[in-house]
Image (cartoon, rainbow, N blue to C red):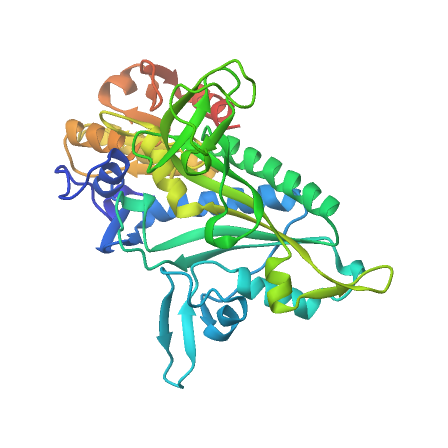
Length: 418
């Protein structure tokens, strides 16, 4: 893609009401645009990151046998009245359709997926199964702050497991936890798993995948010896400096964190209230046993941005960066422009994702925008590089710039991105 044709511009000034670095850089870099409080456009750069996260999540879940589907964003209120949550969840946005039907905008999908279960999971032969969707949701939060960290509309991965017994639930819970660890490793995000409360979702055995960050709204206790942790809301009187209840050797410390993922066992609470029963091997009718597993995909964009940056801008991990390579042409000499154009065509032809900065801008402007956007590899074609029959390469993650012969460039890039 040529930058001169790319939709979205960088901004030099910090937008008002921006309090954290990820919000600043995502807005200034042209990744997102605020429509209203808690509502954002994902501009082309941001949408590329979001799409890569979406794909990686689906790939890793598929490896565990998870089946993907898509459920509606608008739900009939009747489903929520079956579980009793229609009048219990304060973030539920309710409305009446033109036909007089009471509806809600989905903040979560337990009701609709349980409705599917009672229609399709009839006997033990239909179990176990794990269903997943990556879908937009809406929660009418009183407070929306921190850019993408706390929004009203957001993209969520939510999977639901269905089993005959607790043994099966334990197996699927473990399977999904393993998939989550693989996902976070691929996207370059370090997470800490802590014991937590399942909140309004119900159920038990809840675990949160937390990203340690000063901007995080959650406070968690972590042992300084064994890394055991728990959400402070479920800590039962524990506080900073207390002896670890897991290893008995270390001490807890309180840190701020961002919740990136949440897994918990729902049990039979939804199945019983919505009559999602199956016929077991012995001929008896039993409620399906459920588990629930969610990752805030749009929040991941902010989470990565919050922990992967420097004073100049973002530093995207290579698997989720909007582009792999930022190619810059410096100078107006015809030979420079021709070589940059030629190199751009070659790289794209080899399958690399390239943002070519062909704009008629100063070197300082191009460097500043390149650092702000945070693409993993920057290549510079200039009069000096042509004299050396090389291209200047610099990794956004750090290190000095180096001159790479044009003939060697493809091999260097292939090795870095493999």
